[in-house]
Image (cartoon, helix red, strand yellow):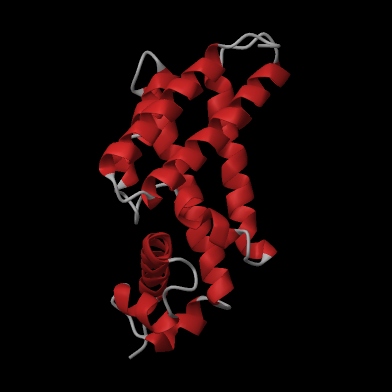
Length: 195
């Protein structure tokens, strides 16, 4: 049975969305095409009509995940009179730690992405730049270079802390790690040039 163009596009979007979640849960190599398509409610036979390769899908799913993450940061920032605090509270939280399928793709796939093709790595690079831009806009700084430096330090600390907190099996230590990182991000943001 032939599928309409509109249905084919809807199926493609479903596969990208499902892959975005499943890649974050299982890693790029942790799930095969058959299970990806099954997760989207489709058969494996239609995959190559929609995508050139698994790398093509991984790049599109990564782009979708990074765009979603950036929107979540922007939404958290816009919902508060203290945008940086809102992003810190959202990102460095036990709730976000538990969101393996919908949480930060930098945490879920960062090390895995570094071993992928340039096509798959590009959405991560673009997403990192977008996250840095969001953070830069929230940094109290005397000049752009200072805001950029603070944003880079804050993003590195936040992603690293969330990654480590997900590794830990003890909730108490994991929570302390997130709390410590949150305090350090605030300290970095408030620091004066040369501190």
